[in-house]
Length: 293
Image (cartoon, rainbow, N blue to C red; front, side, top):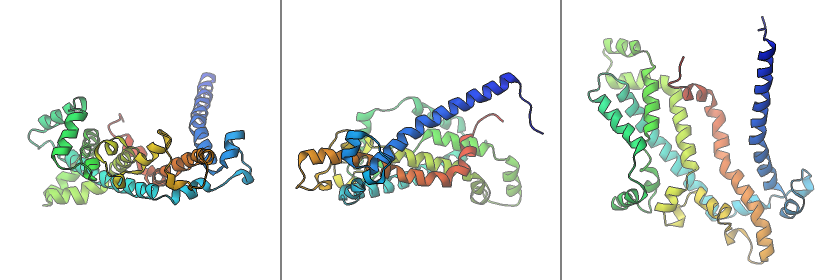
């Protein structure tokens, strides 16, 4: 039986629908502009703006990017850094969260206090740089992966999720003679897919979009991730000469630089667009960890 709404409720529903549609437009319109602009002929884009005529479109931007070694190498580095970072930080978060969720752990309150202090106080950039340097991590992939691998917020999320798993499951397995490792790997971990996939998504996206650590710690251009290559294109407005033939004039270089920027943004967003549908079914439950029931 359909729910009967009052006039005021119907007004609120329509108002909510209006703001939701407005929010969708605010997100979709810039994305649509970038995607269409990445396929357009630069001269048409600069003179007349967007055009949906196929004759005004070109694949030159994508050809220049895919033929450039720096972009390909940066893309591979970004995938390696993001995947490794997600694997390490999620592993640490899951194990630490499980331990902190157990009331039998002695000193659990002190551990949580120490973790929480790091959320509000940090050493700063210079001490962190000196630490990375003294550990011999400069100009290595570990300089990008290791410093942020222990994420206190992810540990708190994991701890909250594990505390929500019925204690009776662990007690029943304990009575049957299961070890703590068996309880974790055979009972708790299979029930933890929502939080695991959400943490993987958070970690991967965060590392994928990061460029500052690589800019500080990596001097070797062969180790630069895609985001650092994009920074030189999008912010510093420096297009790699390898993307544009030496025979082209300066005006042609400026003309092609615009379409290369848009194509680079689209390519850099593809892994995240591909990942999200596979994580979506776990996302809602995972992000609601700790909310009121």
